[in-house]
Image (tube, rainbow, N blue to C red; front, side, top):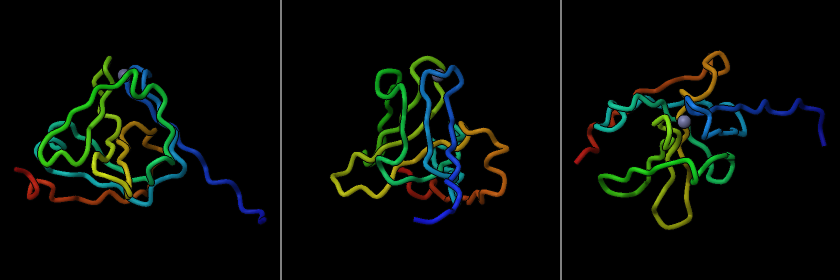
Length: 124
Ligand SMILES: [Zn+2]
């Protein structure tokens, strides 16, 4: 046991509030991707171990979109269309899932490094 302060828990939600995410901690960094999907949806992706992010309203309030090599499914709110997160479709063990950091209050993410990722090069 130690006396370190608890890691702050971050909350995020889609525009209408039907899908709400609780993150275990602030991301160390996030990625801005230029693939054919991300350049349209504009998400900034933070990565978490699968099972560490609590997603309320999923799957009942979400729709999925699967494309390309079908290794993951992109999820969005059924009502407002906000891209919320993605989940792997590959067989376990899973390394991680992605959360759209734009759902979190930007003041809470100040200082999080956003890296440019050249996803366009993976496009089919
Ligand atoms: Zn919504």
